[in-house]
Length: 140
Image (cartoon, rainbow, N blue to C red):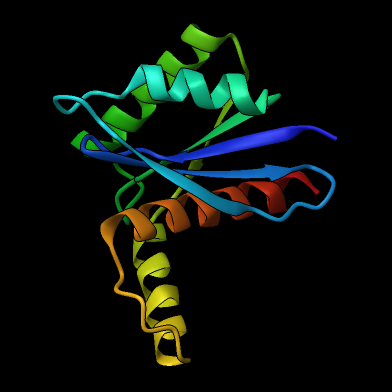
């Protein structure tokens, strides 16, 4: 069994999800707040030390036409920095609309009786879980 951590990278907040390769169930974990629009490397390091993943996954927000935006470049840079800092393999996966899908799932669960207010942090960590689910599906 190996642990995989996925990131829904954002300059202000980065959603985190965790899965293992046996159950292939991605679980939303947390949201890490950036510092001055940069990753909070100390929190990410703590997460990696705690979970000891063998694989990292970063969602990359390509444009609908497949092109790059400023956030595409920022997510790709984040993935390279993760690999360099922690010497772990980092996979990237197109995460088009994962935050939108996460928000829709949360709204749907709210309509089914969960009255909890939807926060941006909830959306970010669920988006990371959706990214990880997508990546896990490509591995089987």
